[in-house]
Image 1 (cartoon, helix red, strand yellow):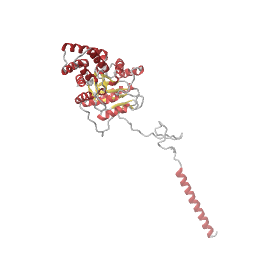
Image 2 (tube, one colour; image 1 turned 180 degrees about the vertical axis):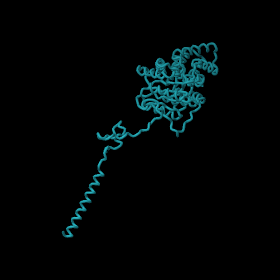
Image 3 (tube, one colour; image 1 turned 135 degrees about the horizontal axis):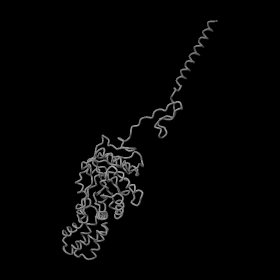
Image 4 (cartoon, one colour; image 1 turned 90 degrees about the vertical axis):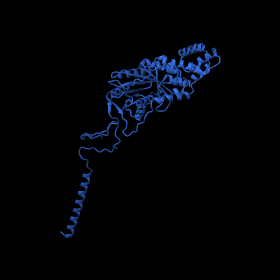
Length: 401
């Protein structure tokens, strides 16, 4: 065979060999290894609830789901968690409780309260005839004092004016002050039941209709208790209103108070309240405060549920205080609300909000007379520390100042 033909055959063979090896190498690199499945779906494009696990061929084992750190820690019960304050957060220092009473008086003095001013003007007239007494009675009724307390006050004033007969402004002021203080009744026990028991925290439930500011009131009350050096835990049992639990937790975070809340919307409010009390007992806090959903007093189902929350909580500990939050500007409608709530959960104290923005200071007397329950706290404004313990004499002084 000629030398040229031999070289040609060798060259062709070499080319064929090189192509064969390269093709085999490429095919080897594209082969799917046994036991795996390659999906064109993006890692973030998994069906809801799949936990990121790929769909495998029948003979291939499913890939393990990634570990997920819990968003809330530590867990307290099924679908419940304690909202803890971030370690780096700077806590606010609530205003002292004692100074709040002075602010109450100052704000009521500045408010347009017709009760004290109107009565002093009428009683200081040179002649007090039946027309004047009619005006006094009308003033008291417009101030939401209520029919029975109005008649009682007018009768007492009539007798004193007849006997004492003085028109001196200071004497009239002192006389009116004495009668109003007697009506507001400083002898009622207005102490908040917030003292820890030997074996458990004090339990406080907060109730009321929609829109009166229950969650905000609890946040402000937590600040009052923190200012008194008490350890507090909040229970977000309002599971119906969107973001109610987050709102409550935000109030607590500002002063270092943890919140027990459900991790899912629409959880059973009684369960949340139960877990809050259990957490409070385990952590040995001083006070557990439970927020509840707002409800209309004429909705029987919702009111029954409120009673259920109280019964479930009392499987662990007696509820020491049931505070009913009322808007002072609602007047007589607030009395109807108070009566129904008191029948369902045995209200022990009233929180009266927006008192500084109304001329109807008589609502304090009317509520206490109808329920036999004291006003224990009053809201003074929109600020975080605008909540103060109610003091009968300071309240009357502010009306007459």
